[in-house]
Amino acid sequence: MYNNPKNSVLLNYINSYNLIMTTEELIISFVRIFASLVVFKSNFFGAFFVILIDFSDLFMMNLLSLGGVRNYQALDKFLDLFYLFFFFLIAIRWNSTLKKISVFLFTFRIFGFLLFEILEERFILFLFPNIFEFWFIGIAFLNQFKIKVTKNKIIIVLIFSLGLKFIQEYILHVWKILDDYSAVDVLKSFLEYF
View 1 (cartoon, one colour):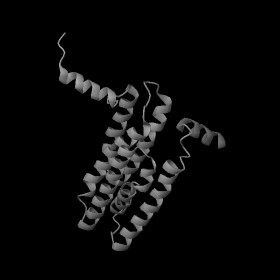
View 2: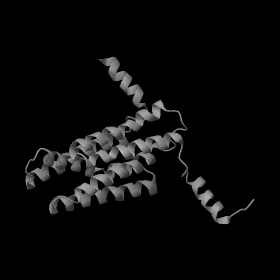
View 3: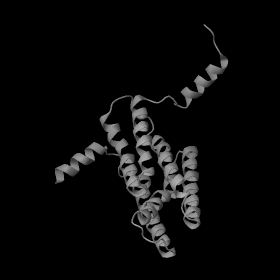
View 4: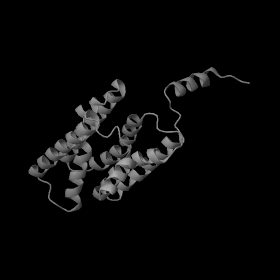
């Protein structure tokens, strides 16, 4: 049998960094990436759909048993990059001020993501919240309903984006309140309550 040393180095790299995905990870990735394309059809409503799809992986992980998800935080943050990039492609077509803010917020999040990957500390995600996501939704809302974008509205969208995202990131990555629950269990408890 022919043994190519280049292939063995590549195989060692793939195995050491777990680059071969489980079937479950592939299904979740496929759903998350392709469902995110809807944002090009409708920026505002598509963005909401993308966020819902982002949460769907929690249910898929609980309902599928096809090899598991080995590192949920890493996979989730990696898949987030796809829809964030799609949001970014739309945002860079906005006017100069909106575009500059979008580029800054997107870069801020990518920097935070890279730090998270290097340091593997979830607290980094709190320090570098995904403000760009809520910013995009806020501006897409104004555009969808043909509301004139003014300096005051930009400030309001930024304040809301920052506040909401810091709360969300604190709950998810500092307080870690949802770490001990499965999405299916939370849904069952919610339905039993009503």
